[in-house]
Every structure is written in C-alpha cells, then in structure tokens.
Length: 277
Ligand code: SF4
Ligand code: SF4
Image (cartoon, rainbow, N blue to C red; front, side, top):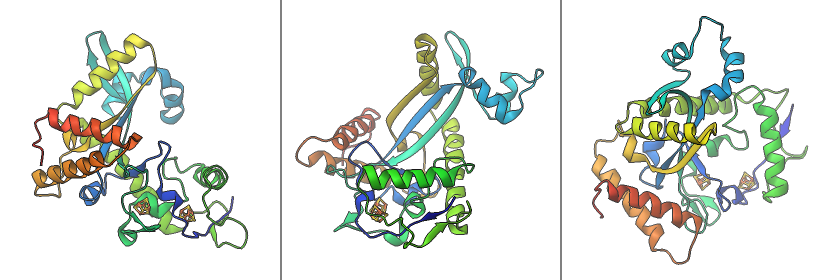
C-alpha cells in the first residue's frame, strides 16, 4: 500500500457540519480545555455478544472465565439489579466546533493554533482510530472518501509527495498514533476511578439487559464531571472557562447541532451546581 498526499490549504477538514467531531486525546485534553468546550462520549458493548472477537484476541480457553478477563482489565464487571454483566467500553473526548460547524481554531481558512494543533489534526490523513493492522489501507480509503464525498481539496495523485510507502508510516506519524491509543487507554483508566462513573455504567448495563441490544452509547457528558485535570492547579478557573465557551455558542444566532450539544453540556454542569460565570 502506498499513499500520496499534499495539503492545498482549503481548510475543509476543519469543518464539522455533519456530525463529525474533532477528537482530542486524553494525553492532551487539558492543553485544549481553555480553547474548546470539551465533552465525553461513551460506548459500552455487551462482552458476551463480542465473545468471538475476544477469543480471537485473547486465546480464551476453558479454565478462563469472564471474571479472569475482568481481572486482567479486558472487560468490565458491572453489578446490576438483574445480576452481573461484563462490558467493553470505548470512551472519547470531543471538542465542540462553533455554531457554524467550523473548528473554533479556524480563522480565515487557517488554523490559528497550527504549531500546537491536536494530534489527530497532525496525523491527518492517517486514520487514528483503527488498530495498526490495516491502518494504511483504511487511511487511503478514508482520504479517497473525503476527497470524493466531502469535497476536500487534498492532492493525492502521483505528483504529491509519498506519505505511505510499502505499508510503512513515517516514524513521526506512527508516534502520533501510538500517543492516541495511549490516550484512549488512559481515558478508560481515569474514568474507572471517577466519582459517579459506576452509576453511568450500571445504567448502561441495565438498559442493555432489558433491551437485549449489545451496545449503548451516550454523548454529551461534560468532561469535568468525570475527569479531574491533574496538571491544572485551577480547576475552578477551567470550569468557568468551559462555561463561558458554552455560553458564547449558546448566545450565537440560529439553531444548529452544535448549539443542541452545547445546551445539553451546559445544563449538565448547572445541574451539578457549577456557578454561571
Ligand atoms: S485545531 Fe486547527 S487543524 Fe485542527 S481542526 Fe481546528 S483549525 Fe483545523
Ligand atoms: S481538506 Fe485536505 S487540502 Fe484541505 S486543509 Fe484539509 S488536509 Fe489540507
């Protein structure tokens, strides 16, 4: 697999009009809490429905049990009113764009934080959210789709520099992807320790038990409800700033998906008694 790529600076990948969102890795989220409203998205999957995948990945043999997988951190054991359930979790942090769907850091088609932009922006067009196996093929497919369907103006013909050659990613891109995956693991670890998170998991598990669906997803959890910033001494100041950013979006004219998300996140903070700035 090879892939040619050159950015022509059209700025289109910094628009999020159709539900696509800017993913922020947990290794860097505190760096961006002052510039974007941030929120969490969780997906829980019933582990028993994914048993085939687990067996392939972990060589599950007879003496091993769900409890063993839970103890080694591969699934989460949740006590519910209807009994014990085993879940897999995927959690992500997103930055909310402006009401017009553009990234709030985009100014005159240029990234105003280019030298310090998030790592998914640095890695583009290499996909960050696929396991390494197959990542080059998925990236090439994604770039083609973005150019054809989303009208991105990236150059991808032979005249553009080669980004991927013989399925090998450039070392610096590989390092970004590694950091991204480290961030995903970190967010799960942090959430497991967060106050009130066990209740969210229990609710999800109970809903899946009664609905017989194998997955449950919720967006729009305010980040500071669950994740306390380790590096930031002034958590109250950060919360105030998040509220201000949300207020700015809510005060803009018109209706948009972004405003709906902002309203939900804002309300959740208010319910927890966060003072309005
Ligand atoms: S941070 Fe910069 S590069 Fe990333 S989406 Fe926003 S404007 Fe684009
Ligand atoms: S869509 Fe492609 S060409 Fe346009 S700014 Fe993004 S990477 Fe560059």
